[in-house]
Image (cartoon, rainbow, N blue to C red; front, side):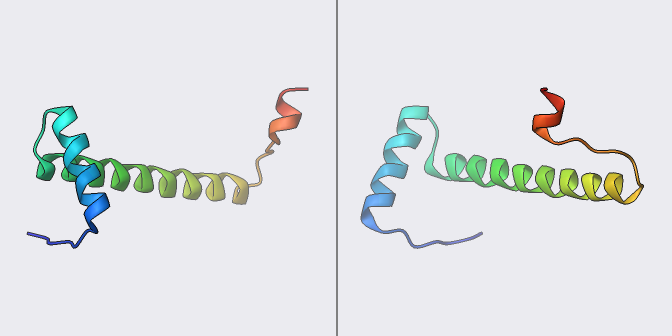
Length: 68
């Protein structure tokens, strides 16, 4: 279990959005955290894959080079 302190404005917004979504505040916060963690993990994996690709000596192209 984790406890967090929120200012009144954020707490109010959180309650409103959770209610709008039809879920409990706990479920909504859990989903937000899970989504953020997955995004962060995906970004780290992609960054490492890019580093490994560049380190392998393979040719890379900039965005502009690709769309010329």
